[in-house]
Length: 242
Ligand code: OAD
Image (cartoon, helix red, strand yellow):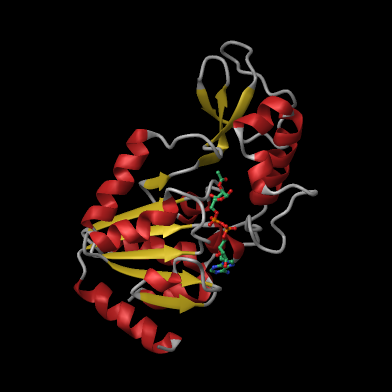
């Protein structure tokens, strides 16, 4: 099916749908200029995300991990939402039930105006104390090192779910509910290799949803999707909104 036919088909599916779930990944923010994790600009210095975004990496070298997050924060602070983020704000108003689940920690969905976002992996603009677990908003640019908790003086860490850590059970419940009850699931700009998000499309499909992948390139999940649209999120997503 070519893209035009695929878009027409998805629009028809959306017309009769009451409940929509959307899962987004770094690809939706790539069109705003935020580098993806596994794309050509995915490396920071010589490190992959997996080598920095973990409790072990933080225990070994907190300064290095904070340097990476400071660099990402400074970069993200200069970026604005793109037409794909904006189209999802409009789409949310058109359905009785609409749940936006994102793996992104950049806050661009919120900046675009989306509400009730399920931020699976946390948020780069939040910090948490490694001692007393107090969580606060933090927009310091650059963030002072070592960042200290105002409540207890402990070292702060990014409020982000790292490799090897579990998702907040409440967040996981919200995801499961959305996946089990949606008529259509849109999977936008994710490589589909990081769990549990990687299995969300199969879960939704198993519960009867129509699954759509929007991605620049094919992914390991493409074969299991009902429809695949290959293109930039900023070009494709607005075409799905009436
Ligand atoms: P990845 O970097 O793994 O994948 C980005 C996906 O976006 C790829 O499949 C690209 O083909 C696609 N893509 C790139 N540009 C695009 C565009 N303009 N329009 C549409 N698609 C585009 O990012 P994620 O799948 O989000 O975890 O990665 C999952 C998690 O791994 C992240 O949340 C992060 C990372 O380590 C944490 O930070 C904890």
